[in-house]
Image 1: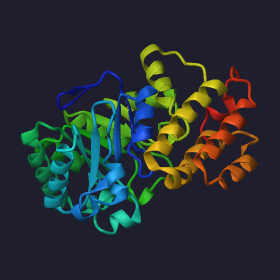
Image 2 (image 1 turned 90 degrees about the vertical axis):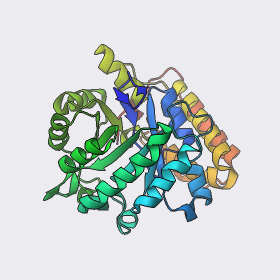
Image 3 (image 1 turned 45 degrees about the vertical axis):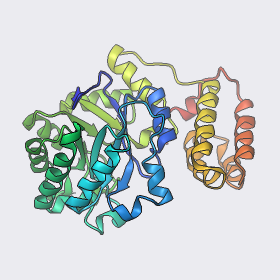
Length: 336
């Protein structure tokens, strides 16, 4: 598939997730089989660009191409300004967030709240595309099926997106009011794909190679985007891509391979965030990687009390070294 001048042969992408898809995580996922990853959403308000939080979200130093930055907001001029700001700092694809269901985002009519105002959607899309056009940078859009099950607006949004020059569209198969409850539906994604020519990327509840294959066939989508199922399982991208291209399953990782991945992830994570923030923000990743192990619950409780990066890393290495490095991590290979 094609996004602007960027060609992709691997149809398994990393979904942007607030507090998760930082630079270390994106780099790791790309190493482990994802060809494309989008950053955490960054505010379009210029007053927030100099904050530590936003600066980290916009940091893509050393990240493999293409660098895709997601922006969020409700003011068309600010969104255009944010697009230019990020392009001048290395962004090669600009992604617009119209899918985040968080209350604090929707409260300021951003994210999926925009799906209640198609006129504003049109203005924002036009403004951002026009801002990016002189740079030759493509604009993509991530959205949901609608505000609620009685207000499915994805087909109208998709038509606007195509008409206004959006290069690709990602749809999460839930409404804003669904949040992450229940199961994703793919009928709306299939309907959208039948009616527009630009690439469509399917998102929502894709947690295995078989599910990815099913969603691609059912919707006709050009690619799938995996989010929560990759938390603590970044090797899922390679597993899915391998299955889609060969029809065969890869064996689950071994404890030795898990050790290598987790240690690499944590070392870069600590370097990126620094001692104080790094040891704290690493806890959720450690829990995702190891929390499904039968004997991990009590051990993780003690890990979460550690406030030193090197002590945290040493404790994890010690726990992993108690397992046979050649033993498959069957207990950890499936989502909770």
